[in-house]
Every structure is written in structure tokens, then in C-alpha cells.
Image 1 (cartoon, rainbow, N blue to C red):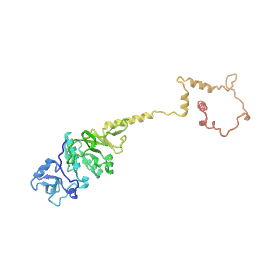
Image 2: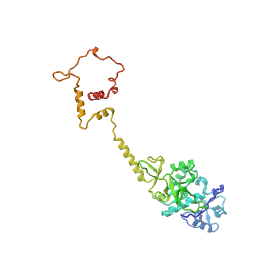
Image 3: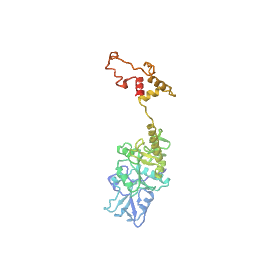
Length: 369
């Protein structure tokens, strides 16, 4: 993939960089969208526009503008009227655009075009880095510095767009960025040497000329080995990821989504339903297991498959060998005086408390109760 370098901001921008305009329309010409200085075709139109024909895109403004290409190669539009203040301020943009930001923006736009989608860079209405004309549209944001993620996400959603935050690896040590990674519809974007996926590269630097792979990670999910949890796929093809997201094949779930290892992520809906079904089946199987009590354990341990042991026990209990019988065969009642009773042992509570009796006594009590 080749990316034509365009400098929109210097690597160390001044306060003036935040106020430089980047969009314009042409007087007397109908345009589907405002011209943008970062687009090479638009820039050619801007540079060749007659003086006084470049205007601010805001309907209530239409202040005249002029194009500027400074010695550093930075493109922007200068205001010719002091009353025009319609720019992308830092509160809207989350910071100035760097060479790294622009490289990612061009790379993602190129992939979207390869997949058959129109990708508008720096869309004026939504303020999106890239507005992909899918169904529904997707606002892709490249973000490596802190910003108001919630506000910017809601702004685009209120315009009927889905949102995809792509966070470069260079922002990985920011606490607020890492929080957004798992609480916003976001993913990590990485660039590795094409021949060595353990070596990160920086193709936006002027002296880089090697090949690379663009990968997405952290929140791209798959079904885990146990079938009951969605886990990260690791590094995933950026082209494949965009195809799945733009077509609706892969959607954002979260935050605090059940059965996701990190509580959120980009997953195929059928994978999510499969994991949910697996967990329902597991819960149902455990609910059907009946745990026997102590008495049932004793009886079950004493039973043969044909029940002969139980019948033998029942015979012993109904006619104990130590109990003499009368001529009629019924048990004879024995008369015992108080003096013949064994001495009272206050610590022997086995009869008062069946739980302390031996297992055989408890078995007899169970059958005769």
C-alpha cells in the first residue's frame, strides 16, 4: 500500500495550528461535500481556484479564504475575513493532526476503498476523521491522545452513524486511552514489519521504505477453547476487520457484557449467541444433579442391584435376634426394673442426638420412624 505524504500540521504545532482552516467550498459551484486540503484532488482544485472563490463552508458565514503551502510543506487555508472563526478547534478534534495520524487516516481510507466503500476524510459535517459510506455510515476516529470520547461518540451516533475508535500503539501508556479501549467501540491498531510480526515499524517517518502489515488487536473477539467465554483473537488483519465491521458481520458488545473476558469487544453475533447457549446448557446440566443427604448415602451404599441387602436389613430390623418370642411368634415384652437399667451417663447423648449415633443405629431409626 502506498500513501502520498501530506503535511497538515507540524509535529510540534503552535496554537495557530488549531485555528487554521482545512475545508472550503467554491463560489457558484455545487459540491457534494466541502473540499479538503488533505485530499490531493481537492488540493489541486483549491490551488487553482481564482481569488475570492474559496469560501468558508458554514452556511451563515461564506467568508473568503486563500490557500497556503508553507516552506515545511504544510497545507492550510488562511482567513481573509477576521470575523470567520469556523475551524476544528482542539475540543472538537482531540488534538492536532500529526504525520502518524494522517498516515493511519490515509491507510484506513485506502482499505475502505479496496473493499468498495467511499471513505470521506475529514468529513465537515460529522467532524469524523473518516466517514465511511456503509449502511449505516461508520465514523472512524484515529485517536492517540486524551479527548472526550463519550461526547464525540454521542455526537456521531446522533447523526445516525456507528463509531469505530482506532487507537495506535503509541498511545498504549495513557490511562484514559486504555479505559476508552474497553468502554468505547474501540480497537488497537498496530503496524508490524511484513516479514517479522514481532517488530513494530513507523512507515510515516520520511526515511522508512520497507513493507508492513496493518493489524487490529485487543478487542477483536473469538470463542475461547472452553466454549463459554469470548477471548481476544490477538493480532487480526485490518482489512478483514474492516470488512466485517462495515458489513455488519462483526459488532461491538459492551461495556460490562457477560461472557466477554474483558467485558466488551468486537464479536460476531452468532459467536455471542453460541457462547450464551453453551452457558445456559451448562447451568441447566448442573441444576439437574441432585445431591443426596447423609441418610440416602448410607442406604445407597448398602444396596445391591437386586435389593437383597435391603430386604435382609428389613428382616433383621423387624425381628431382632436378641428379642425372644412367644409361642404365637410375636416378640415377648421384657420387664426390666430400674435397677437393671445401665447407669445414666450424662455425656452419652447418642440416643438424644441421632446425628451422634453410629451409622447402623441411624439406619434402624430411619426405617422404624
